[in-house]
Length: 98
Image (cartoon, rainbow, N blue to C red):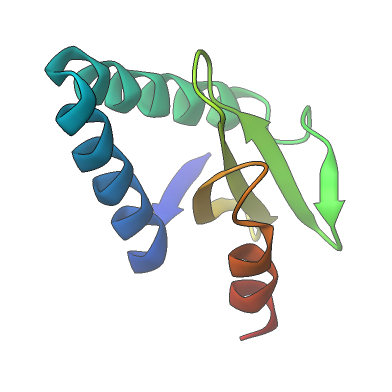
């Protein structure tokens, strides 16, 4: 399935990479590689991951406290957010309501 990443999710990725790179350069690179791996896994089995809000699903990102939040619509995967799964849930709800 094709994956479409929203502008907000792209910003989430970049902001998280920047923060991790400030901590240690390799962390930013590892975070990005784990995002790519999560996208591949989602594309192979988009219905494997639990719904967390209405039709929105969540795939945890390996080695980081983040998750990919996405919808499956019309044979496409729409990534809405990539957020810290304990801190930013209000951002997710706000995006889903728009």
